Length: 444
Image (cartoon, rainbow, N blue to C red; front, side, top):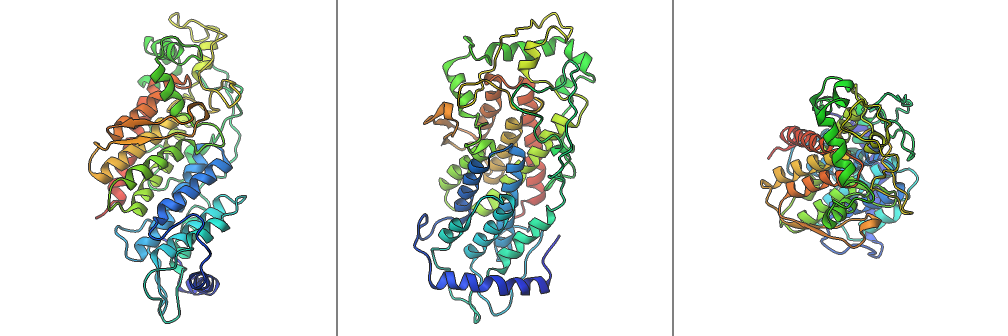
């Protein structure tokens, strides 16, 4: 486990303690916070704001979220919080006082500045420090070196994790293999090779190939494949008549594929906030660290299955348009078929990466797996919201964590961008990721 050395901590103290002390002595007027507010949830909201502003694929966004929340978690554990550290504890300097919230703020701020370099978080930091630190300072005053050290630890640990690999994807126009659908070139094609946050590798929980088949030819000519294609053709069409009004609503509710929304990881973070706020005594720093950890590794696992196997499965719209190149008499081509999924102008599209497994479903499985294990029950009722512009103002209520995750996964079939096996195997993969990470990192 990595920690900052004594010399680096001492240098950091010179640069940051004075700033923290001055903020505590003459706090800025409160713009967005009140006394007793939850600093973890505050910074999670800042993160969601950054998601909306930065946009991009859920891969990079999930990595940023994990880095921020894990730095905050290690700061809190270093200052006496419950649990074992993720990377390691950061030692306090003698003769200085350490306010946990002050160090949480610094940890979040320092990470966000790096992972979103084009966004200015200065006002967010000022707002977070508008409430003075609690208790008495040490003889030398207040210090933020623990938060700074935890942030630097995570930045160091992820500096060469493979996330900047821009090797281009080589498109194959072989039947069954993914090809561009008009929504852009392959997104995050190397993400399955990124160093995981807690797993041993991106392939640790790699699912079997679609349908359990061993080759693309055996898959394409099977009745199972035909059923998968025909299901999404029937229920995921832009003009589907068999899809119910509720199925259409939930398809849009869970989408959040468009830039300007908080994207799929952000929606799950928002639901985590809702659940945590309703349950007194939640250690939010610990909960969000586990959720973010699981979602980051869920992204790596899902993108491993998408790009690093022998089948980079084509999207339903390609399968439905294809001129019988699958050699399966049970699939009938329809060149005019379009998925329900659409941008803000109503232009229908599929996300620009292979279908199997569903990223939404894998995120949902990982999220649900952590939350229900953290609280020791799946039977948690809550109401969730969405930022997808096609479901503005819509809320949906659930009686369990798993019910929400399952609906999230199935929504992709009704949106017309995924097959059912993408959803089912994505959920299972996400839960496997969550179970492994929860067992590895959750210590009472």
